[in-house]
Figure (cartoon, rainbow, N blue to C red):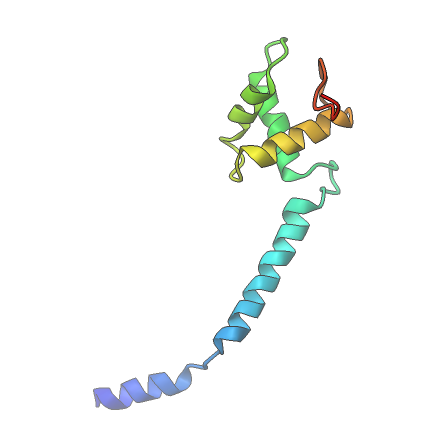
Length: 111
């Protein structure tokens, strides 16, 4: 009797080829990356890493200027992708004069 149950439950399952599963998963992940991480939001024009940087800077705010390394270190607790991505986004925001008051050379390519 149990053998009949095993055979009937096995027959009801549909098999999906492994190649088809990876195509589906890759397309879902790629669209997530493009829409949720790489493209700025329509609401505020910021990418998630930029939003996390601004949040970290707000928690650090005490009226003084802070070093980039300190901002990156504080942002790492909110951003899962490491310090290089945070540093690049921070320098990019500073060079575009986007919500950050910069000092000295701030990522000038000549120095």
